[in-house]
Image 1 (cartoon, helix red, strand yellow):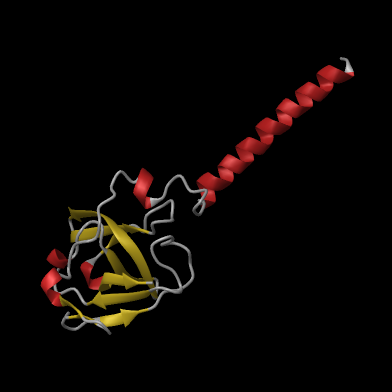
Image 2: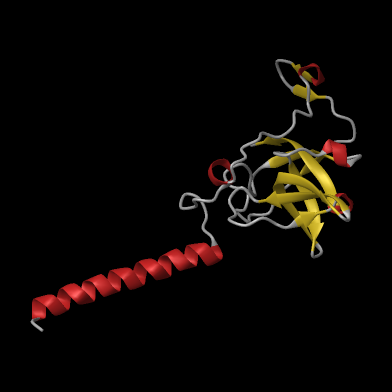
Length: 164
């Protein structure tokens, strides 16, 4: 075998080896924007916006302030996990409410739920029922996999607004 043939075969082998390993890393560990091909908007097939909890008549605009009239609302802050980029991250301020029933939660809503003793903030991508009742499937906008079935008893808040 001459040296030119050996170099060509080696290059083809190395390119194949590298691309298979890089693709494997993305499939196993996922990726974050801007490299993600699985973010919420493009791949989930569902780009539903959150439910409109705040109606126009609840917003009062003045020269020096804006008042949003929402009962029992609180402010939320977020950890710098990157799972909800580019929608929210550590510097975002959220307005949240406690849901009263399963009917308050819609596909597209951003909810806070407890899982493994941690509070997680992700988007509802599906609502279904099984033998245990209603469940919500959530996923970070910047994650490649969903969080599994989330039950209403584990949902603590619905984000109704984000202020940057």
